[in-house]
Amino acid sequence: MMADDIRNIEDLSLDDITEEFLLEECIDMGDDLNVDTRQGSIYRDAADGHIIRTAKFFSDLRQVAEIISLQTCTGDVLDEKLMERGLTRNPAEATPAKYYVDFVGDTMPDIGAVMSCEDYMFTLDMLDGEYVIVSDDLGTEMNNLVPGLAVIPDIDIPGLVSATLGELATPAIDIEDDESARERLINRISGPDENGNKSQVKTWCESVKGVGCARIIPLWNGPNTVMAVIIDGNGDVPTEKIVSDVQNYVDPGGEGMGEGVANIGQFFTAVAAEAVTINIAVSVLKKAEATYSGIQEGFKELVENYITGLALEDYSDAMSVRIAHVGALLDGMEDVIDYDNLKLNGQDENVPFTIYQIPVIGEVTVDGNIL
Image 1: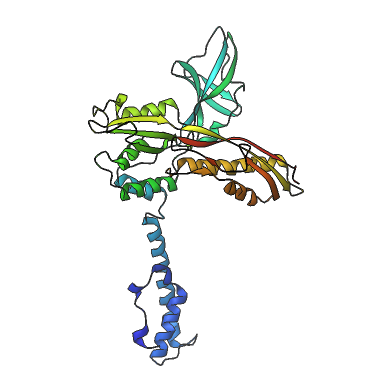
Image 2 (image 1 turned 135 degrees about the vertical axis):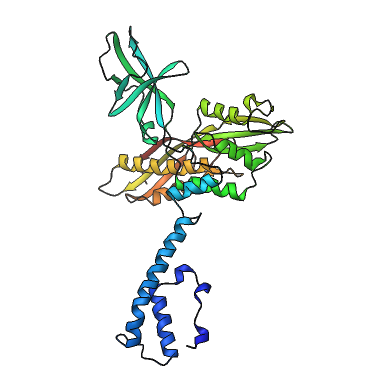
């Protein structure tokens, strides 16, 4: 190999510069100089230490590049990049779940009273004139309690006969993950957020706490009108409060008076996405040690993740819950040998949804009636 053939470092990517590459270059240079390049030679003994240190340096440099790159950075570094563009994670912290609670008796507990349900602790509060209990624990795992469970005050309250858990009033939300935050940041960088354009309206909406995605519909009711279909951070139908918060932040009352962040004369309307329930039934051939209930639970979790991802994607025409994708989830389950008779809402076809709608998981039924 001639000296002119030796590659320059600046012409290589960081991934190319490994210990093996540097050793190969070293041997080629030695051969070009007509020196002994065998292991144990003076030339190799002198070069090996430098090769190891140089390879370690470039390995560390690769890690630094990954840390600071927008495409691969995580955690605090991604938070700093968000702040540079005026963004934060949404939500910046995981939030608690709020459940309605029904009391029976002559005496009601005081606001702030500590209560428990199952193995979780709650604090009593009011929401729109109704009693709610707010979970001490944060995140979406707190959304799974079943109405009808007993709620037990931390101290005995004379005159209180019973307390029963009601429906979920405000779902808990996990802190926004790196992928979602990165996608919003990339959209901010690549999309010109200015003058109340579509990209900026989307950014306004998605900066409100609890909003996971906003689908923007320009000119929905004539000139200077814009609608945002709001989806919560869990890919579900948002609460009235979240929708109200978006409306008040962007254009209070939808009057176009410029009292929110929207421009004067821009009439903005926030609405909640409508739910399209997806019921799934399938027959499976399982492994001997597996159970149908276990398969059903695991399958439902996989489908929920798929459907949540669909709900939080930017909408495009003809979006559907695809039966082939649902089937692929079954194929990937370790305990499932084969499946048949897969139905979505009773049909063996895709379930479409409009820009105003999101799919939500309904009943998932798994049985062994495979032919």
